Image 1 (tube, rainbow, N blue to C red):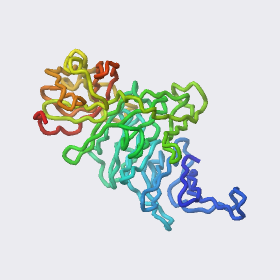
Image 2: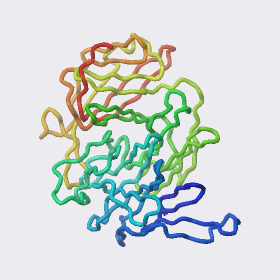
Image 3: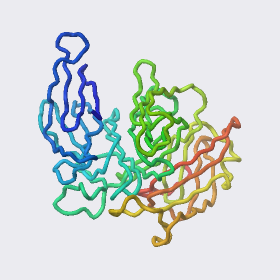
Length: 380
């Protein structure tokens, strides 16, 4: 089983090829009857054709991935199963080996897929019905797509070489991170904060490490309704930084200052980064405290992608991005980095080494994707 969900007090388990509801008929806290909710989707004996994740929306509809088995009608698809029905519907296509799914309080569906053939780097997405997310062997369309729905952001191997799931912070928990999306890395055993915006109807954003390193590859996270803290379950098995075979760990918000960015906005003339706490002005306005570089990936059938220059697409490597000025806005939390010729790019890395207003260091790196350019920043 690679999916479990308690819905209306009943345990639902996603097995390979079946969604099962467990019944305790004599109230002894043991399952006596295993009800087949549905098994009407393609299942094969291939080694990587898993059924992963299990989430529900406000209408009680189940969502889960069928990975691999691209030659079957449901292979490489995100499936949706409505209540009191037997046959799931294809919600979105083009997945390689997705292993991470979350449904936010407003119904936003997020997920992540792994670097490999037709997936040039690990990607974090917000899914929409009918979307195609890159894996050409599982597009399931009459005509081959010429492109794909872009992700919220790509992640280089140094940040995440194998993605886990996501979890939304409740609106009343974790101080300045309330309502934000978190991403778990199986490969790096890390917790990341996802910053996203919508420009012209297109989602985009980036991630920054929160600073929590787990004993094993972080797979699933849940906020407890009892103590309001995050519980993370992880395992080991494939190329991770794990120190243990598995873990169940809690991440608590202490109430101390959070030295993390909480918003990222892309403008035609630069980038705005908002931090949780006020910054030291002289440090924030010193352009030598920042370093930005960018690069693209190639969408091909090869496994993953090298890093390719934006300036010269035939040359490998990263391009430095010049910062003309840095200005701390009146709120003391937001820095505007003035940049000439901001353009769409698959991967950008923003490093900063600053000080908070109280003198504490604020140092990290942010990996983001620019799908669309916002309006010029005017100082407001």
